[in-house]
Structure formats: structure tokens, C-alpha cells
Image 1: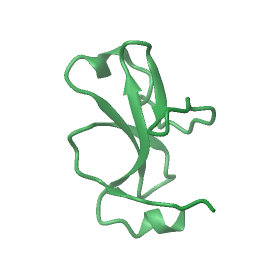
Image 2: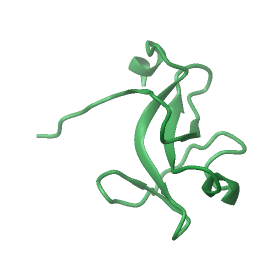
Image 3: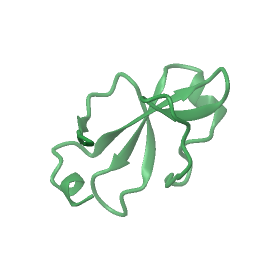
Image 4: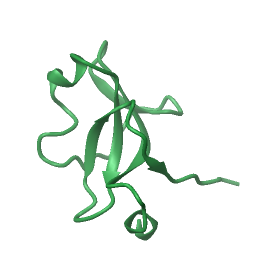
Length: 83
């Protein structure tokens, strides 16, 4: 995650979305999340469903924990290609 430290935003999009209907986080590929590294107070609260769809991001500084952000936030992202 060294590339995350060089981001120009305080967080980098992880490719996670939150489904309020079923109450879980999933990757944009459709797979559910097995590993989690949420910062305290992020990732599990029902209050996140009240105002907007949520996306998961990783903090670009500090201990790089995952945070929940409104989907409308503009964030850097990392692309990878599997061969």
C-alpha cells in the first residue's frame, strides 16, 4: 500500500460499496468482503444508510485503516490488472 501514501486525497477508494438492503459491504466485482480493516466507528453503523450510498476507502495517512465515505466523494483510486 505504499502507493496510497502518495495520494493527493486523504483517502483512496477501495472498490467497496455498502448495501443498506442486506446490510453488508461488497466489492464492485460482486464478491462479499472476507477481510476487513475498518477504523473505529466505520463500516458497520446503520446510520450510514440514512443519507447516501456509502463507499469504502483506505486512509492515505496514518495506519491506513478503512473508512466509510459518501459515494459522492471524489477520491483517488488504484487500478490493478490480473493476468
